Image (cartoon, rainbow, N blue to C red; front, side, top):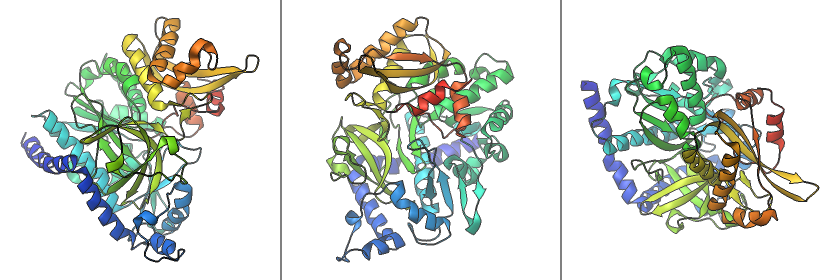
Length: 501
């Protein structure tokens, strides 16, 4: 009880910080860019850029937009042990991203500065806001379960370490957090996800867990395994004090019925936007699924309107003060991890600007536009979540790709879905998905008119375990990996069709 009182007092002191950057986002971004620009001038990245131009008085705004391919040579040099390349000093940790943007994996630098002042700082802010929204919490009396990805951290030459961001975070947690985290490090940092899943389920079974943090798809697998081992009907029977699920990485909407069924009682759901590149947003309002842009955590934000997006050749790049609501933007960040004007691949849409709150709408490379319909991940997630509220089904995973009919010269969307519990009437389900997607996207609705441009969607219902088998075949088992919701080619879906569950 004393520990919880001290923790509540300690974490509550952060509300002054949170309220300041919520009320003064432009001022905090101005301070951030001043600090980052000062550090930038100490880097080889800046000095080498400066040497290539005639005007030596270049500034932050003169840096070209970057993606992983343009920064990779500098990241490679950093991994060889060279100092001061992208950030002053030596960068020792590299987060292995899940590789949803491309078939290759990326290694994102993680500096001690970004770990402390971004990932950890914003994680503490999320808990502080939760306590403010729901006073008299007693989270420090019970255990916190972090469902990370493949936790193995590999030590390379020159003292460099590579692993999932979740593993890096777990390996460096402060003592006061580590004493409440479960399972033990040797399990959390297990490299084999399938082995880890079983070990974790057995290790946490008898713990008193009050918080779970993880990606919905993989967390649901862990909870199912716990129920199998415990022979209980719901997680609330295993952990009666469970009250909070901190989720991110994908829209939880399509998974809500699955979690409601698995957990067996009402708990609180709080979303965070934490990626290998940084921690950018948190749900700061109770029961409202919008994210507050975290503007005081050593990340400077820029935004490219998606209607003029042209990757690193984009010309129209906006500052925070210039963004509008209800428009989709590609997110560009500069941070104390040494990422400079870096297009991270996510798209967001602001829902308000006083304060700045937003939703994640998808990926710059994940959309459906085979027929000019401009369907974003946000549209299909919303359609699936809305239909999920109307019908009794629990979905495990899904993805959507185009199909083409050579005889009619008309194609459409083909859905590939794996259910934990299928809807009672597939025909009703399919019509509801099609109808709801028309509601979400006017371009799709216009092109669906009389099946002239886009035909009625097709649906493939995959056997249970298909997606997990696919992840395994791609060596992508683990909490950081996600299935692309939308693809404009059929490579992924043909692999799924050939996967034997």
